Length: 108
Image (tube, rainbow, N blue to C red; front, side):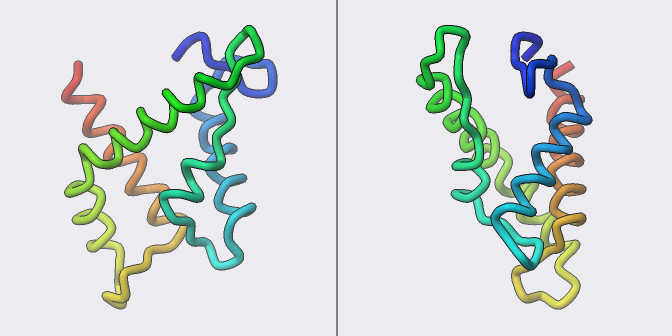
């Protein structure tokens, strides 16, 4: 991940949060975003200018989400106060951060 750049700078946590917020703002007026909208928001270009990397990135994101779908669903269900299948942007961000933290901790 050290070779990944956003706006000419190495990718860091702040950049990722900025990207996530921009995706949510661009795709929704009510603070929701579906998986396909999330995946389509990424345009990865390698140093040669080719975008083949985008397919790998999408596959990695979707594989991660699918592999941990039960954790995402149960955590989202805890944040779904009205049991209507919806969570706020803020809660979804917290779910993503929590699952990421838990999975990265187990990988150490």
